[in-house]
Image (cartoon, rainbow, N blue to C red; front, side):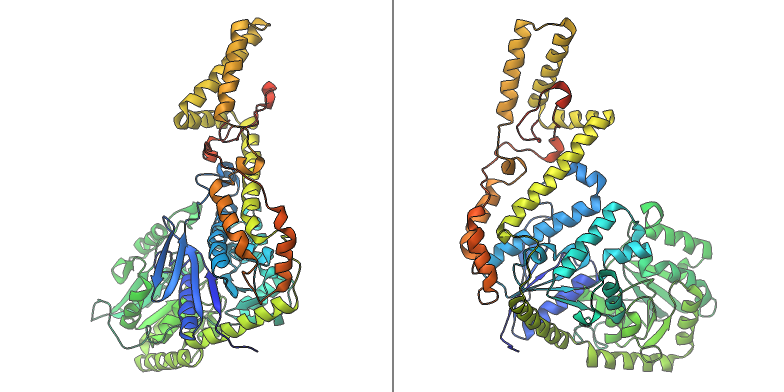
Length: 585
């Protein structure tokens, strides 16, 4: 197998520091730098909190994009399917930027997480070899009821999109055997085709030696790092604290992580925890700290004596790896892949999930035996150096990139999408906005409350267009009341219709649904280079590009387009249907 240097694109919504929300961000950064150390050319496409930009992360080019690239659109879609709307907007925004770079400087392979279907469009277009990394599929959230996820159509649709992406990949990897078995069963997929690649860590950044975080010197410190959410098991840790402090008064529990709105009724988890703490009278033993940047986190692990990872389910939490790399023993659970990283009795203690009593007993065992604590920490550090160094994990991943490229070349499968990849964005836009208009029209027909909100938004955004439409309706009523057409009113109606049509010019369907001049310019710019996007990887794709080049969608600019918030349904009830943009009607 060839071992030439590869040009790799890592697509990930999360990437530190701007969108460093959790394990996906941490993994992607470690992998990017591990691949770079091996001599590969790596670029990252990630989300931005505000505007599109390019950042440099110690030699890694990070392209950040805003997921609301369609503006304040898809209003009705967001009412019915908010999760699906977010997923589709993110995946299309990430693809838009990826394809722009890929057309200019072709990549050899693309690597994405399965979570929220970030590999959906690379998968259905078969634009280039695709590796998808497993984290926790949405179907698992639905099955376990994690994060208050229910078995609604919205959530099931997200899970279906993830499944489409996964079965479209050339290679699937999993960080744990536990997750591998679940996904193989969920997809009815051959488990042997899912490769185990453990999470990587930089043992130089996370090491026992270095700066310590400020903390009381007369306390034994017990550390939790993670979002405050039910899946991370934080409630069970808080419930376990009374049994610990009853025996050990010299302890301090440090809880590092952002609050989330995943509590009862989508409420604050932090407030729920504070009620438990107040009930148990343990406030003096607990310190809350908001999320710490990844670059500063090692100091807090070094300052801790014990780290607790009480997850209800976690495929392979980075908290246990970071703690182990810093030479600290870990109390973890058997819920997910943690037990594959923390060997019970060798690097820490494994207990059953959702069991505060077992947690408190494990913590007390470590508090009672400082020497055993030290031995477990040393063995944990040794295990990290042997199995989880990021350079080694990057080498294993690169081997799977070569495998993905070979599979892509030798067994080209028919893509779900047969047009050239540079057309998928226009088609996705068309689909999303037609679906949104269908929902919007139905709401307008069925709900007087929605009609009032619609007219109020139109009045605020385009008062003159609102006035013209209101006048037209009033003239309709006047004609209906008189039972005949009045010459002056008829002339006024004709003039109003002309003015409304002037403000809502007739356009091609593509333009009407947001395929703007900017998008057409991007498509034209990439058309000439798309055929070389993965030259030497799949001649079949190049031939398909040539044969379908003539099918390019013909679109034109839409200078007067407004946000979907201004959409106005077809006035079928009055016998009049405007053919202009639904956003201007």
